[in-house]
Image (tube, rainbow, N blue to C red; front, top):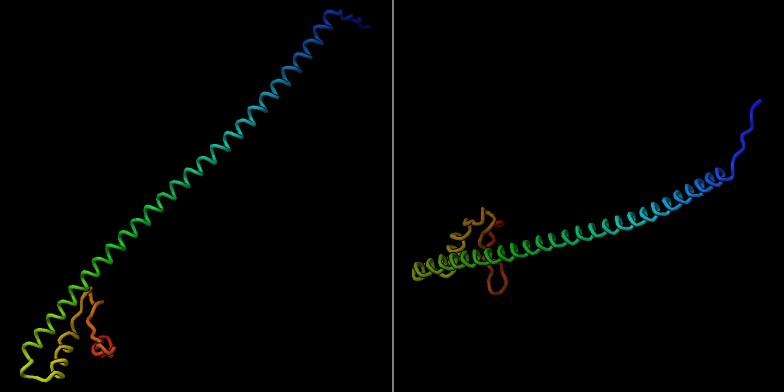
Length: 148
């Protein structure tokens, strides 16, 4: 038969203290790790939100830059177009004035008007998209080259 061993009080005490110490270390470790994990989760969420806010701000800034550039280009295009149109109007006026001065003694006003219209009708500018038209002071269309 087997012999029964007797456990001494000091050994039992030592084992109990070791078990309690092990549970205590495990509990403290668990509490510490869970605290660190919650802190990590909170910090990572804050960093994520800060990154998103920063990217939104950068995107908003870039969009504003693009809008400013578009506004600038629009105003420049409008100014260039206005200048070009003024130049074309002055050219048409010079053609009409010159034809009038040359023909005023030889032809009637109606004939001179017809001559000016036929001189301006074929002229195109802005890559063929621009043309001259004439409207009387009463609002009557005199020249519309697209539909003669």
